[in-house]
Image (cartoon, rainbow, N blue to C red; front, side, top):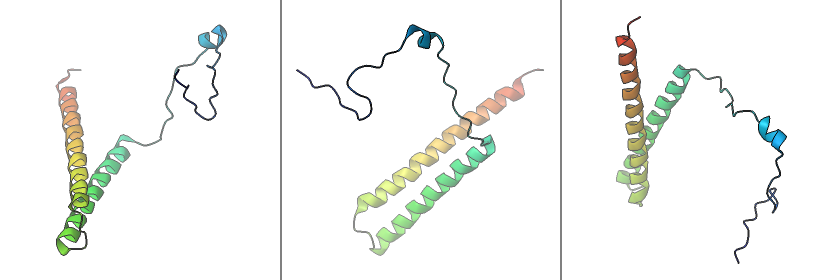
Length: 106
């Protein structure tokens, strides 16, 4: 027999939901973060820049002999690379959407 998964605070019996609760359930509405699109993009670009600077610093430390583990430097470089590729993909999607909007006739 398999033991049930015990998660603190959830108990061992399933939650009881009445039919009335199901009918009155409200749809999920995410909380507004209050950030503008510009702020979100600025934060993303800043994070990419930080990761690239971190990778550069790690490589310099590796060359200087301060770091003996090559995997640490490779991990920093790969993080920076993946974040840059993701940023470029988002940029390309935004530019494609902008081009489509500009082609619309009003």
